[in-house]
Image (cartoon, rainbow, N blue to C red):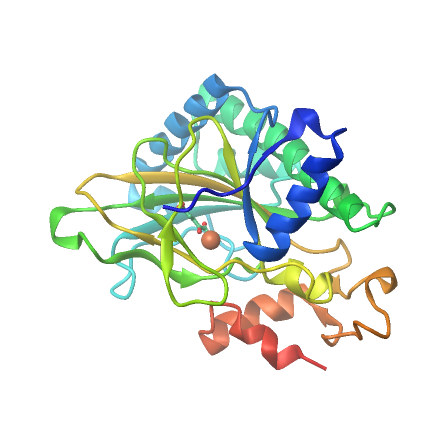
Length: 297
Ligand SMILES: O=C(O)CCC(=O)C(=O)O
Ligand SMILES: [Fe+2]
């Protein structure tokens, strides 16, 4: 099991927290946060709300269609039979969150929970992005304007699937992910950097996991690490997780700020558009960060 660095967001005046966050982001591409501001009861209510959505009839679920490339409902497929997911774009907009709930005829308490959770988790992800920016001496980034995508994941694990992947090895095609894992069912594994071994991520109840994705790697000019991870089925038990993704700059243009480019660290990636990058990943089937190498200078 990997013991990931734990960052206390309430103690950020302590320089060590800042240093630890940057170190974890550069090495693991992943860390935990505690004292993040999402109360435990809201986390439980959100999980119950997500369960309720997965219990909807199939034709209702399919109303959750794509807004940006591959952002909507994903039914289990032959290739990925254990996985099912809802997607909500743009989770930073209460209007969009409302529209998603209306499409699915969500009950009042489900709608209220999703709206509150979206608002709170958006505050948390912006707080983390801002602190990460500051740890790289970038003070003028308006992460609050960057679009967000919610994904609710369900893994239909059964005895016969033990040992197989619920979610194949991938990097997240985003800047940051804020993940509420299943507090009871493990299975998330991350690749130890520079090796081919996976380690299970140790659960820490009440905490949230932060992953850095491909956009963090490209936008930081290669400073931040896009963690490779997967979900394995261990037991015959349904697993749920809730991921909020901070995607990319508002104008869709991914380009390292000039402060992160210098003669020792020349610009690594061509400027590209985020939506094109999503399409590139899906069209090439390269889900574990390899598509980024096609954008190297
Ligand atoms: O379910 C999990 O724990 C991980 C989900 C994940 O990796 C993702 O949604 O990108
Ligand atoms: Fe992921």
